[in-house]
Structure formats: structure tokens, C-alpha cells
Length: 48
Image 1 (cartoon, helix red, strand yellow):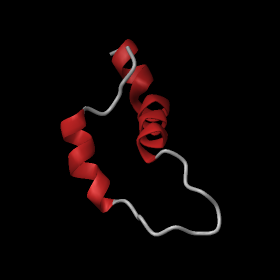
Image 2 (cartoon, rainbow, N blue to C red):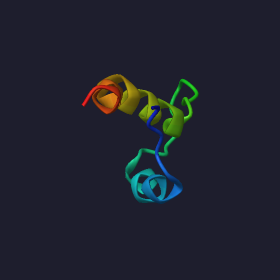
Image 3 (cartoon, rainbow, N blue to C red):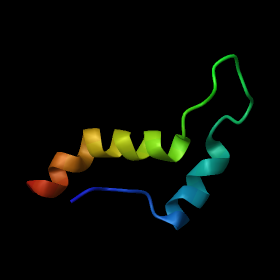
Image 4 (cartoon, rainbow, N blue to C red):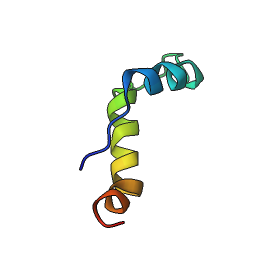
């Protein structure tokens, strides 16, 4: 099972992320956070 942030979860998290542009274009924050959750917690959902 793949974990992805729901719209409600994303609405709560998005204001806490930095939004000032820097030298390098930002990656899609939601995609990055979903990847972190899959990497860190995904195996726990598959094998409790």
C-alpha cells in the first residue's frame, strides 16, 4: 500500500513549508514529502 498525503493533511502541512524562491527551482513539495513517508513508513504498512 502506498502512503500519500490526503488533501486535508496537505492543507495543514503546506503553510509550514518555506515559500521563498532560491537559486535552484524547488521540487514539488507534496511529491517529496510523499516519497519521504513511503521511504520511512511504507514498509510498516505492508508488514505490520
